[in-house]
Image 1 (spheres, one colour):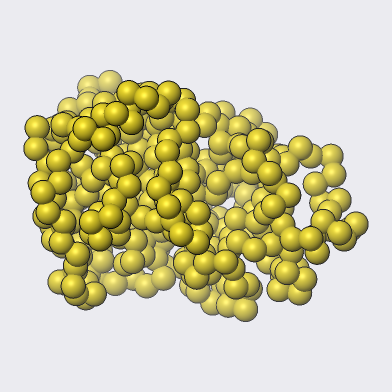
Image 2: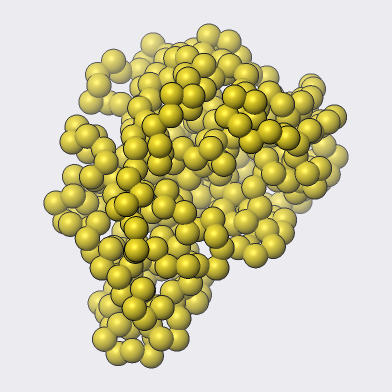
Length: 358
């Protein structure tokens, strides 16, 4: 990877060193190995102009081996929400920093509003980034969202992933969908190269998780509903990291299939979470499995308290702070979890005043 400028690796806190020595996992790409935080100041303004100010990211360039054909571009879709934009910026930086061909990555951001300030913010932070912002019409889910266990899960933008085939232009046939609370520490082309075969969707599966807990007793006690998974071996997968064949999704009418279960939910209350369960009802047991290294999820803790968690054993290509706790909020509150220090080197937020020293 050729760089216009570079980001250094950082030294590690003693506590983080101990964790890395005693936890059975490995990073598949160079990652910040240590961090020293001198002061983190919580933002006091909620305005776009005052609150959301970021340092300009380095210009990461393609190596000589990279293709120049548009057909070889990698398409990444992410939500773009003012409340999570600090996470989005960090995620984008991590993706292009670890990519072999960063200029071959095209970003597609989904937003409830097309605001010039947000476009300017992204352009000034990433002057060399190929990206477009698409408006997701919240009326598409008006009256379809049921109250879940956490308010953040009920936001319309959380459901935009269901409508990718309607939002994206037809030339975008395949995408990687990523939530805003992730960090990629490997070349994302490895995830892009997953062979979907006849499947519409690919994601890491977690078959040891208790799948029944994602649905209510009302669902499992109803014979017609519970036989939904008949002929499948359904396993939990996290919808914050997915490879999606958008063309197959569109042809198969999968948006309407997911919407059907959202309608049933309004009538019967068959699950507790937001956009995840209706997607599981359609796809669980019928996806292409991806290596677990591509979604070390749950780092934000549960949906109620967001307590600190340890990494799962194994190699790591992507860190995911799913759950209530977000690293930027815990760092600002000066109550970070140990793993939040792995997110901090990618934080370009100017007002955070994070001092990272070798």
